Image 1 (cartoon, helix red, strand yellow):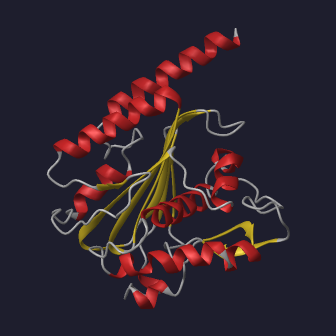
Image 2 (tube, helix red, strand yellow):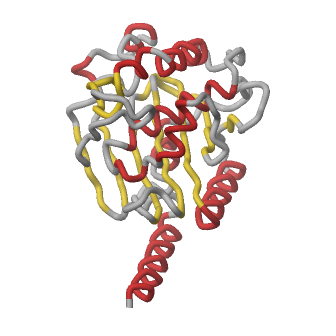
Length: 265
């Protein structure tokens, strides 16, 4: 994990404090397991696996935001999405607020792996109350309660932020499933189209909360996603064995590597 920034990634204020990525009170609200019953979480980036078993989704903390942001607009977004977390057929939550919450969670989760992927403009836009069209947010329901969160990426530009490709953060909180994907440049758009095509063809699709939409999609008519399918969605943009497009991801990374070597010559 990269060193924690000394200033808030959203407002630039200081000091930063240890804050939960997800509201810890949701363990009781959503009737989730107690601390000793959490699954491990994992990340898979650029062909490498990293696994920790000391933190579940509601235990995981980061030190990259200030108390003011956490206790004001970030807390407001948590409160806004709580009705949907309790009932995924509740479409009363404003889509823009839901998307901003999912993006906020994804950015915080990604800081556990590569802080450089958190681009300043994204954080500033969220802080200013804006939605971000570069992010795509999908939702669904698991067949049985699941407690998993992970990060994967097929991307370029780690030194100066995301410049091409995709970053994906996925999580479950009992039955609710949330997948947030950040797209950059044409390589990212191509990979996203691959994801969308898979989503259309599979029997257990996710629903997209589209940028600019006026109502949350109801997942009432969507089939519950069997838990064994979650790994395919969660590791989609990786060469993890569970990814249905892992060979394409491997080929993409190899092509990028060759191109970068040529540029360096």
